[in-house]
Length: 113
Image (cartoon, rainbow, N blue to C red):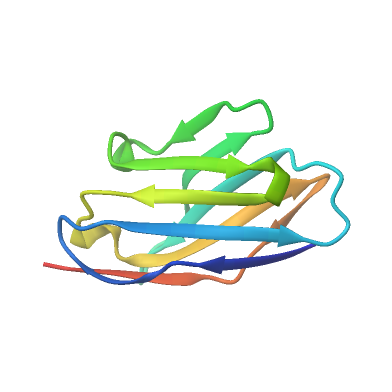
């Protein structure tokens, strides 16, 4: 399974970005699709995830600002990020669980104050 993430960039505080991550390879169905982030000097943390049944989890720090969604036909997960804050600056990684977990390459999100 290969993951291709895109959508990161530089944005001012209060702005929005939309991340995408497309999975390819031998995939029958994806159990969980998730976004993690790692800020400089900090541990990687779970931002949001969505199950095959549509259940979603959000970290407290992003609730009400970020929205995770998935397109099962395209094996793609999205993260709509609104009202961005400087503390959202991090490398964002997608992860999918297809029996085992797979990580995508990171995409850098930088929020300027």
